Amino acid sequence: MSGLNFDVITLFPKAFELINNLGVITRALDNNLINLNLHDLREFGEGCYRQVDDKPYGGGSGMVLKPGPIFEAHDSINKTSKSKTILMTPQGKVLKQKDFIRWTSLDQLIIICGQYEGFDERVRCLADEEISIGDYVLSGGEIPAITIINGVTRLLPGTLGDPKSLLDESHNNFLLEYPHYTRPLIFREMKVPDILISGNHKEIKLWRKTKMYERTLLKRNDLIKGVNGSDFHQRNSDSSDNLKFYLQEENVYPDW
Ligand code: SAH
Figure 1 (cartoon, rainbow, N blue to C red):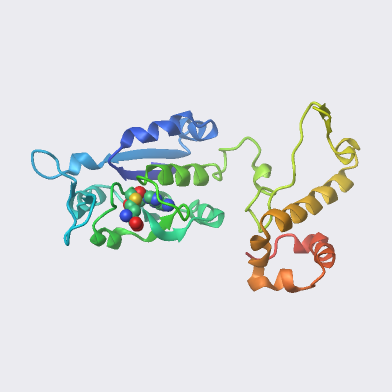
Figure 2: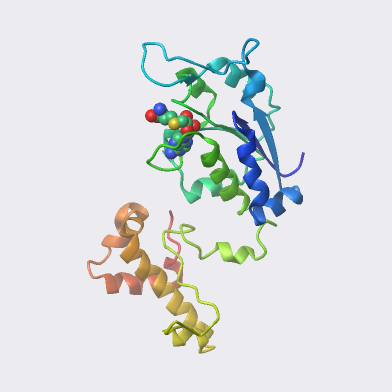
């Protein structure tokens, strides 16, 4: 099948109905840019009750997903040539925009969603990558999986109306995006900055670049510090010198 295949192993396939209500992502499905194949873990359950979970060895609270049904579900999926298996877990590497970018070159992403207390430890050997969507714990891997499907799909050529909108956006490089305004010109006494209605495109570009830098410094200083092992930030102790350095065109997108 052409397009990027998302194969999701889940106990709650209905959770993925949300994807059919997500605007551009729905369009990508309709246009076969992506295919969503849901593998209901219950169908691989054991015994007449189709059991998928059991009590943890050693005691303790909660139920653990058994390895058998997950392995069976994973084995049942036809793997393509550029396929990766991702395990959703709060113990994994924390998801970044660059991971979405990386995965766009695949033709299949198999996503395993945990539930309850999680899964039997032996499931980890199925995974090429263990991914967390942040340092907090949710009840299941479905929302993390939808996050990944959404983030990867919007980067695929043909999904967004104007792919140029991806260039300046937050986290594409190490900066947050500049502020946006739309009509009306004055809203509750708050006015759109004059520069944006000046018609001077060179000045607008400069203003936007400056704002990207300023607001990253203000809101997410850690992003700037993380660039090139801090070279960028430490180049000058005075942040106005840093700004001058950054505003030189070739310095806008240093290596990540
Ligand atoms: N007891 C586990 C957490 C289980 S939460 C622990 O302490 O590590 C149940 C399932 O929800 C997990 O197996 C995982 O698939 C999913 N999940 C919860 N939080 C997540 C997160 N931040 N990122 C990715 N998956 C998460």
